[in-house]
Length: 291
Image (tube, rainbow, N blue to C red; front, top):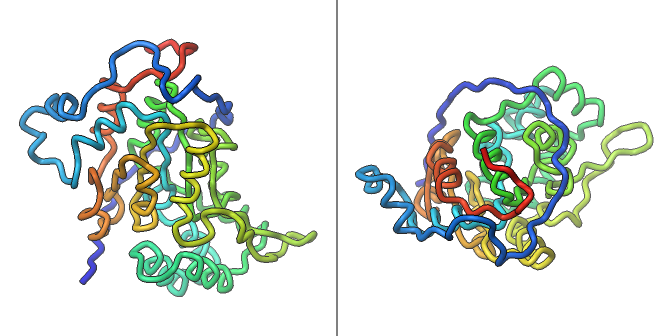
């Protein structure tokens, strides 16, 4: 039996910032300052708390995060405290019908492409529908995510949003969190010349099952990343290991049994992950002045 426990927290909205430029580090082998940390070393730094961590390979996940070339985040229920498509569905008065399909997709009970097509066929959102939703019901950023992304950016680690959600809703979040537009891998809703719903681009890697694994494979091959980490709350995120070396499961919004049991490291906030990057993270570019 699969259970889902929902938790709630509050967050402070921040002022939007310009898109971060897409700057790649010199190579997957290049570091500037510091010696790569070992997992046991990082885990031991938490003292007695190290026995409290949950995961199949906590030490390995901490080592991967400290030495990451790139970190990919799911967006819904990870970067934000909700599922973007459910927010849109509620706004359009179709919340209950759509959320049932969302849960099936997140729990891995149905193929993602089937759930995506079913939800969009229910919603058929126009461009103006989505813009009004984002204006009147802004998406809520998860507490602590901004600090974690800031630390990764400070170390020169490439940060990606890899999501089964919609680019039109995610790009404003990326702008606010200093993630480059080119670093967003998400689904594209199509509109006709009058802005009416006209389908979705099924060639996007995240439009179908195993899409996140496909997206990370593409990024790894394109940029030569040696160590990648995937962070997310759902079964579709866990599918991205491999090619990700480690999967960090996030349960701060919803705890999903399969993710909690299968994650290399399962967390309910981002404080410890931020500390790992801040205290042990390898600096990947030589043009960054660390504070």
